[in-house]
Amino acid sequence: MNILCDREPLLQAVSNVSRAVSAKSTLQALEGIYLKASDSQLELTGYDLELGISTTVPATVRESGEIILNARLLLEMLRKLPSEQITLTCDEKLLTVIQGGMTEYTILGTPGEDFPELPSIGEGSSFQIGQSLLKSMINQTIFAVATTDSKPVHTGSLFDLKEGVLTMVSVDGYRMALRKEKVNCADDYSFIVPGKTLSEASKLLQEEETPVELYISRKHILLQIGPYRVISRLLEGEFLDYQAAIPQSSTTTVRVNTRNLINSIERTSLLISDRLKSPLRVQFQEDAIKLSCSTAMGKVNDQLPSSQTGPAVEMGFNNKYLLDALRACESDEAKLEISGPLSPMKVVPLEGDSYLFLVLPVRLKAE
Image (cartoon, rainbow, N blue to C red):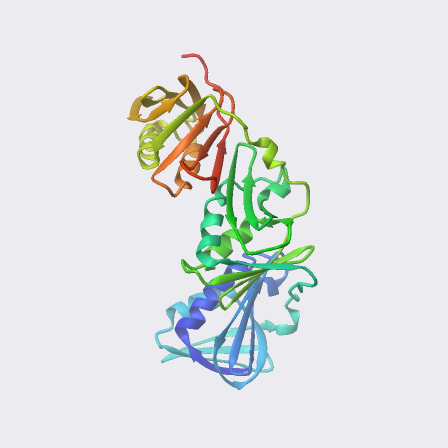
């Protein structure tokens, strides 16, 4: 293999493809990026047997070929090389020379045929959605994906397509995040995408209207994001019946400025740490929300104005879970719907039903 290409697009491609590379693996090939040069382009692929990312960059291919190079090392070399053009050559003994300006690295590669084959998407369904819209939907729900494997199916987000509406749902046992949007898709089906896949896809998605194509088969999903192909296995199992988990009525409704409430929670949470855990005591009153917290370090009280209908109620919350839900609102004001001190609190928009966050309260000890 012998190629010449520009450093910047190659560096960006290696950086993005590296997201799908195993940091540590018993298989050396999985710690590397598969490079294949042919037809005036260089194809790059990273794959950890669960998530794969591939792309191509333009290159002057003097001699075609394939090789696997250690991802971490290749990325650092490209970052450090001083010139704007890179030559990459490797011989039959897999000795690879990467040269830019007066700097030259020689490393040993792994044979290209050792790289595992990416799964192929067979018969299935597909639909399109704008990049910025999908990015927003992921960012508004990913915080509630479970991080423990006690129920592996909840370590991903449910994509539920019904009558041209896509609903994305994440749950972790303490909270739920739901986001819905109209999409151009006639089929009704649902599938569960791992949280890691969505997190990495979100980094590739741009704030633009260019569509992403999603192809779904029985066991895999492929996202075509501009020049990048992201392929991932789907999670199997019974996802929570999210409709049944949402309280249908509320006794108290509070309208609040989200930024002001976030600031107040952050101020009140200063005394809470991993070592000094304590719930946030929140009192919803007619025209104000009062927050307080006491730990071994001391006490803090704060309050902010709000408008409320329904009886006053006092609840306890995990400060982090409450903050995550409010930060995901992406609107200046939100509505809090409460049906009792021990029932889940709903955070919804003032108008419409584009998002819904459910936060479970914690039981408060009597003061």
